[in-house]
Length: 95
Image (cartoon, rainbow, N blue to C red; front, top):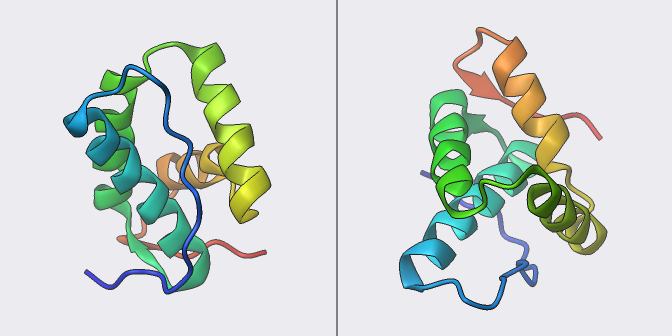
């Protein structure tokens, strides 16, 4: 899988263990790839499902999403929403 070439400071909450950080980072990376190159739709949805095991709370998810968007310019919410609405195997976000 190709990775985006930009580096961002990913939102990490205190109390997360190594696996939590890995799961969250996979989602952040998949969202960045969706904007910069493209991402496999199922990979993104799987990364989101794993992220939701780390952040089950909608309010925390929104907080993290806002923080990620402010540092990267990329929306987790819009990317996941498009992934759920499309049948395409690959996803490419338009700015």
